[in-house]
Image 1 (tube, one colour):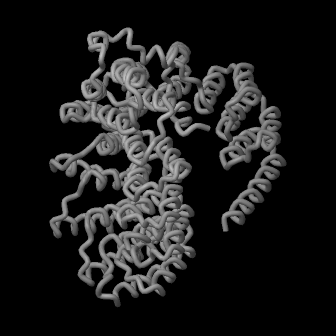
Image 2: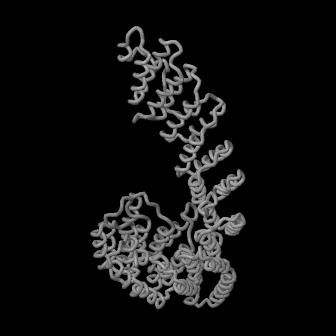
Image 3: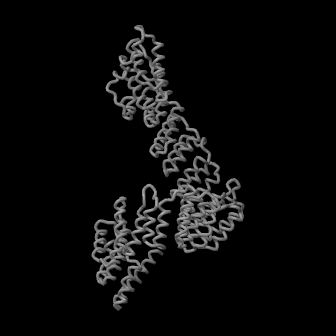
Length: 611
């Protein structure tokens, strides 16, 4: 393989002939030269052409010199031409390739400035892999790349967001260490940080120990060098390895900072090893230089909340404040979300009041954290506080408005929804599908189907149009009411928009056929799902059983129930209730007792599997 084979494989340029490219016959400027060529004038013209980005004309000068002046041009002339081209505004890989091919054609031997200039050009056009290949081949010509050259290529790979090129950066590092070069601390820290952020912790370890094995540890005693690895290990659940690294660097005499301890606190907390997390918290409190900060405490509080230990998080919040560490709005939002999810209304209201007492204004994340109250039925509490946040003038986004709309929907105030959307648009916030789907759901529940359909067609949906949730919302309402015209209209619209029915949509259609008494069509839809998909859910089967039982096909309903497991499904309480209700109405006590016994056994098994 020739020295510049990599350039050849990377370039898309196609030349009919290098002689055509370098032909002097087409150059009016060369035709006007005297019979006795002036070497200085030719070199000046060549460099000026290269500086302007005119590769063709520059090579014509170069070729003319080789044909008319003995022992010219030299490699130094070539280097000057290449360097001038790199200063132009038209630098590209094709141009660099053309210059290199002409050097090879004339048999010029590259020297060290040739390589350095070429690497500079490859770095300009972003061809880092080719540059690294050229660096590897410099040794074949007896040259050792300088620290500056390798450092430039190394930095180029570091600036990339591609994980593959980060691996290439490790290869460059190995080459640097092989030549006895040690990268600067900021670049080494950046490499470890980038690798750790992308979850490439093993590669970060490799870099760490390569530097350690070359006796470079004394150059990298900053905690900023190994902290990214601690965080990377802890975030990937490898807290034991993180602890091992922590102890290792401690034995080496390195001084940790708050971030080092916080990484381990995070690792232990996410693994629910709260005893170890609190032990490290105590160690930090004993070290005046690494006293826990807001992030440290918030890390444990979040993990406690995620594990449902909300009271413990409130206790830690109080302890945090007693020790002079003032929580910020992030800490409060995490606890507010947990209190909201657990519907601990009194504690949430007290905490909300503390925010105002401390002069910490709620933000948009506070509003979204209150969404749990809506699901738990504490509408008034959620609605009052979200309304206050919206009216307070803080920066809010579509997510806050969507939670607000959700509250109004649960509060059965459909008319206020459109007023809020207009306010939202007036504030420069674009509604999204969640916004419109929330309103559509409210219209379907609180208004007529005609009103819901009118809204559906009136809305200026985002670019991709209504989504599957939008169609299913209106389809479900139409199917429950048995409105065949609207059902057909929605199905046609879905086909027009290229939206396929999912299990929810097919289940709605089965419910429609059951409501209108078309058992055969209901069975056809179910058969289609079993054969072609989507796979039916237990809700789908329950709808089928209701349809069969409602239309007097009780035995068929029992067969569907008994065959549930063949569909990969398990009956739920609704499944039992459907058949037991029919059995009671028909006074089939034996069937009622049999279903009750099976339900009791299923319930016991379900509980045991969760213990």
